[in-house]
Image (tube, rainbow, N blue to C red):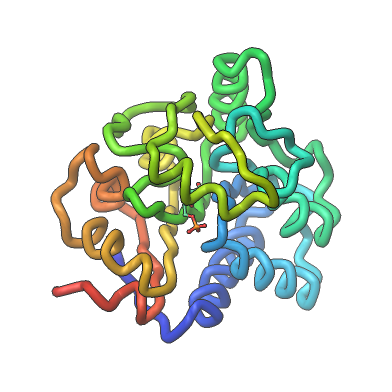
Amino acid sequence: MVTKIFTDNAALSDYLAEQMIELIVSKPNALICFASGNSPRNTAACFVQKVKERKVDLSAFHFIGLDEWVGVPASMHGSCHNDFKNWLFEPLGIQDTQYHLFNGTSSNLEEECNKMDAYIEAQGGIDLMVVGIGMNGHIGFNEPGSNFDAKSHVVPLDEITASVGQKYFQQAMTLESGITLGFHHLLATKKVYLIANGKAKAEVIQKAVEGEVTTAFPASVMQLHNNGSILIDDEAASMLKR
Ligand code: F6R
């Protein structure tokens, strides 16, 4: 695992968007997976700008979302689906045949999980994944205690996730569970980038990079990835010791 430190989020986003473009140019039918939330927002914006400037052909490219809040409709402000629509699908004209997202309002969540696992397999696996890190060390909705070999699954949300998650919504929400890709998928992905910025993430980044590898701190799974990178700004790097 490599850790790269950038002066700020703009530099980090520019670097990561460039990696995404390089992948798509060399493999036009690449499958990219993105987390929603605040961390990847600027990377998505940089990616959109670069695709437009360089007229990158996205017609064969495919996209999946890392996770979704259970019970939150796709169209609602704050859903992961809505973020992806605003960040990528609309600005880039990505067709609905080119992406697959969890439906958090499905009456059969187990089937949602099976459909996602089958989609990934049918695409030949995930080429590049961009994830954030939560204040309890989660990745996606893989909360503390999540197995490192899980595929897509539904997870009861930790108290921290349910309360921090309020920031994405315009009204108070009851957030009880999430549907997410599991760490089997993360570990099988060809290239994984975990990104974080700001002082608030310094402690969780220190644990993810330098702490013990344990399911009690999910982001420590990155240490097991043979092609994983942690991209952080100076502030998020401020508690690293090594
Ligand atoms: C969201 C997701 C979450 C976030 C994490 C960090 O789709 O998968 O795991 O990546 O909670 O959130 P931000 O980036 O908003 O600090």
